[in-house]
Image 1: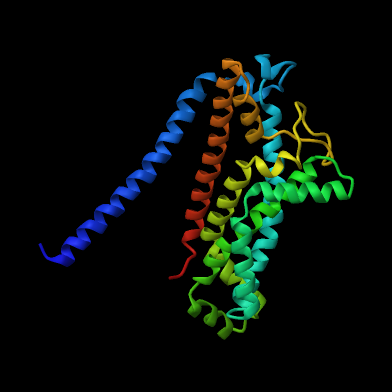
Image 2: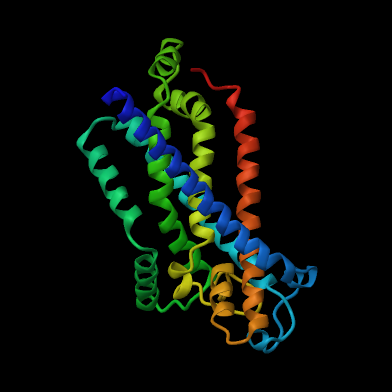
Amino acid sequence: MDKRKLEEAFFKALMIASTLIVIGGLVAVLFVVLFRGLPALNFAMITQLPQGGYLMGGGGGILNAIVGSLYLVGGATPIAFAFGLTVAFYLNEYAAKSRIANLTRRCFDVFWSIPSIIYGAFGFTVMVYFGIRASLLGGIVVLALLELPIMTRAMDEVVKVVPLKIKQASYALGATRFETTFYVVFRQAIPGILTALLLAFGRAIGDAASILFTAGYTQNLPNSIFSPVASLPLAIFYQVASPYPVVQQKAYASAAVLVIIVLMISISSIVVSRRFRKFIIT
């Protein structure tokens, strides 16, 4: 066999094997979580607050963790989105190919790679300095910081690939840079922006380290942004650490709820992206 054909066959097989490994790993995780979690999942578990002795096999459910996670991510994601989208537009439309743009991208790359526990430690230090206790507000702020570099860099790459001819056509029709950015570039980049939003959302809703010290944990629903709040990742952590098998089984049910939430958000983003894809000009 020709050497070039042999190399092509080798790398093709390597790519196929890599793809199968990734898909197999994802299927295995989903199978284990859903197979062990769904039998323990019931209506009461997702509609009731935990009762006394819940981590020792008591009754109740994880409503506090479900609502708490939605509060945390629901507050953090819009904040990160507002700042991230603005920065992405600035880097591409106002400071393109400048030193400040390159430096900003490198900084966000570094922030992206920082472990989430560092964000939690930073947030905790700031909260202690200002005398703020663990609360919903602290969790939202730290999760927004965690999401910001992920969302910004992903949206930056999306905006960067919008065809130049579309922007030039907009300018030729008399549109200002602001109008071109928010009425032309934004519309063209919506599917990719939604993907970036989902990427950051998935990272935030499944993170436990950053909110361990900043959001706290409680068996009740928060009555203000200054109250402690529960979350699904921490609920799973505490349930897995319990010595009672029945509670450990509930941990898989909690994990299944978390997976279902992420899958629902993913499916919703795909549907919305397809509706906007018809406006894209290639």
